Length: 218
Image 1 (cartoon, rainbow, N blue to C red):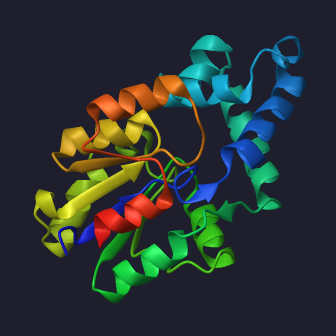
Image 2 (image 1 turned 60 degrees about the vertical axis):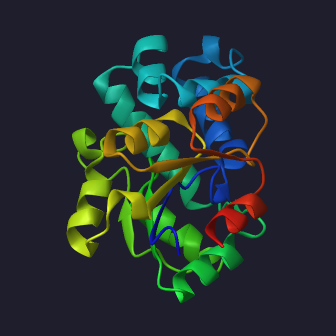
Image 3 (image 1 turned 180 degrees about the vertical axis):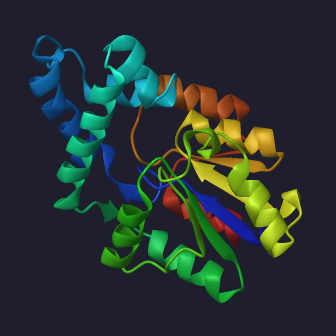
């Protein structure tokens, strides 16, 4: 195998979750905390804000949430997510099963909580990740910090050239570049021209379909 370790983002890379869970949660929270802004965002705009400058900047800088409101929003989101299960993209399970059966290591680097990532993998019948680096980490170690890559290299002895990062958003791209590993843009979750344009220009691989990921790892 060219790549011995696959680092996957979770939302909109492995599971279809922003449109079905995270954006509705965002709107419901705004109705409560910033009712005058509840109609200010479309799904595409929300995805773009997550792409850059990121969700924390959206909440803190654009919407003006205080530290206590940020904690409140996270609790609101966790409650919302607990009863909603996203669906894995068609073909992901087969790709991961083959990769693991051939000796590959699967890690997840995500801004979702570890327990929800584990739950979603189990719910969708996906092979359990060997390692998860989620929102539970201290803020300074979360993606785009290359901490996850450093841990994987130290623990498993990978060379950077043996690791592939797959993500739909810029924090994953930034993490890969900081760590000196290859990056594949997951373009199958949605169609946002600004994101696709950036990813096509800067990524090592731009993958428009899940099947293309399978072909890359074959």
